[in-house]
Length: 441
Ligand code: HEM
Image 1 (cartoon, protein in one colour):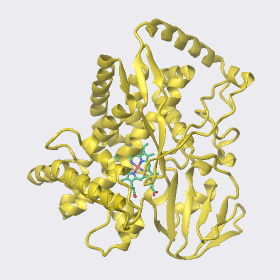
Image 2 (cartoon, rainbow, N blue to C red):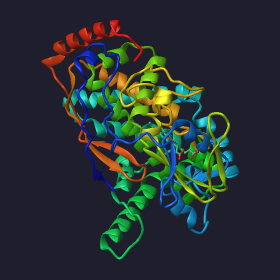
Image 3 (cartoon, rainbow, N blue to C red):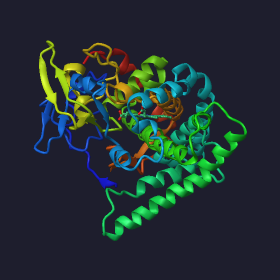
Image 4 (tube, rainbow, N blue to C red):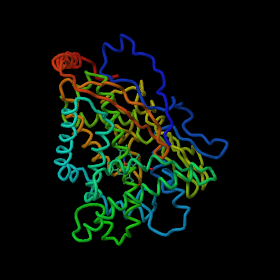
């Protein structure tokens, strides 16, 4: 599953650019430099490729497509023995589930219900760093993301500690399809074992506790709807990938950018919440954790061009590959230097959010976006405010085939006692430079 990748070589910023930089650094995680054109094309195998924002949005909002990413089609091809998890269902069944679960994800609920937990968790994790002086940040971000999502889902009654590692284990066993190769069978057995452990130690105790006393969480809701333990387990695994793994990587990549740019770090620490969240969304635009979304047309889909003319006809049954790195760098929307961080960059389009397609769009758009942004903000503010914090070793980049996204590992940060005062001076001078820097690209 993990294929090592190397970040593409970048031109160093020119002195002139550096001097008036309200900008952050260059993109770090793209597997290769994606071309921007053509906006829409069909390859020789009949797969349609989308690299522009407006076309992508029209497709994701259309009723003529269904989910085809995250190996959804492997599951939907099997005999229907159970209800599909939210991420894999479509049409009315999907709409119904979205409406029913919306109350767990509304921004007001997130702020009121989970803020204290996020603050307390961040404090615990930062305390670990204070004690040890040097940590692998990717372990702290995993712990943070898993514990927050676990609370929303209701996975809070585990028999043993270590749920984060049990969830991580799912991604260690890649299986495309079963074949005579013994490695596939070993992976298959490894995966079954990981799922069984997760069920017995985490999911089953949560179900039992909620049967006795329902709470305000997703598992209680699913039980009330008559979901079986197997259906609940599948939904929990999906949340593991959709909510926990993604947020872990996102917090990591945002920390990486901010640690490398003292001026930006200082600005983040001083800015009001709205500006901080915009900055984080710009990081997600530039470094989308989910690098490709896939859809299959259930009927012919006609796409209109800017003047309403017919632009393309995608036949029924076609697979569509939405290239999120290219879409999020669409210069028609984001302007110049699309592969560079520029918080608050003007966006040329109607009702476009700063993360563009970082959280998807249309029926499957991520319901967990407010949770992910709030917890990242809370954790990063505490982390980056630590005097003497520095990047000891930048993370190694890997690629996760399931979510088509990057993984950051061995991301070593340390607390430098001697550097406390030096780093404060550096940050203060960076902030002074920032105050005079022009905001527009
Ligand atoms: C930075 C962190 C996150 C990123 C980048 C992210 C990204 C995404 C994307 C791109 C999709 C759309 C998939 C598609 O259209 O095929 C999605 C769906 C989803 N996300 Fe997130 N997500 C994040 C955090 C979360 C969190 C914290 C939760 C819950 C606790 C969550 C739960 C879900 C669920 C349940 C879906 C499926 C929605 C549906 O199919 O209707 N996500 N996410």
